[in-house]
Length: 106
Length: 106
DNA sequence: TAGCTATTTAGCTAATACGCTAAACAGCAA
DNA sequence: TTGCTGTTTAGCGTATTAGCTAAATAGCTA
Image (cartoon, protein in one colour):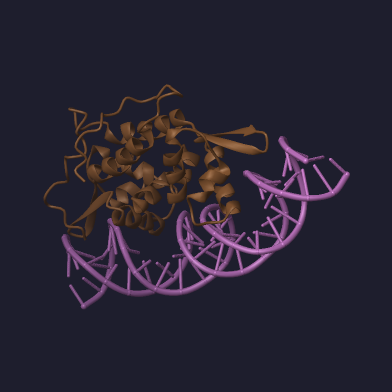
């Protein structure tokens, strides 16, 4: 939980997750999208991986990263549900639809 | 967007948001829930406020903070929707589908 | 006015995070 | 083996963050 929100706090790391939504990409392909060095990107990958948000599959010399969406969903939606519970009088127009509290697979 | 996820990266700040889900609380009331000094809490409030996640209403000597849920919803759900685009056409139970079984986790 | 309470600002230290270059490591091809 | 490509590790400098104490500010009450 802590590590996940920490990983989400950097814009490069969030964008990496977005890039991975279409499927696996190698570290090099991902790094090409950002104006920082590859070692710096490697550090971002490590943080995402240790948070469980991505998985690295070693395919002979190159590493293919894939998104682990369930971990992200569980953490973010779990937090949102905790924050949302019970608001009633203020009636802010919640700007998103979201799923009703369902199986959390906790 | 950036400021919002940055604000969410600290556990104290996330818990402040949870405490505020029931309604307004004063800075002092909020501070009582955490084992840090009031000036430290004041810094956390400032960060949440500058991200737009809470609002501070000055009621004569004391300040009442309230949750600005719509800002949180818009940022978090907007990000989740961007990351989700493409798979999980069924939409809701997304917290269940896991990664492929070949994860090497190198 | 003075005094009291609530909260923030100022100033500091320590820890963490981000970025870089250079070097090392892993795998494939000659 | 050597060489090439892809990726991470090592080491370092700087910027940011989190925490503290002490002091300042804002508003109330007497």
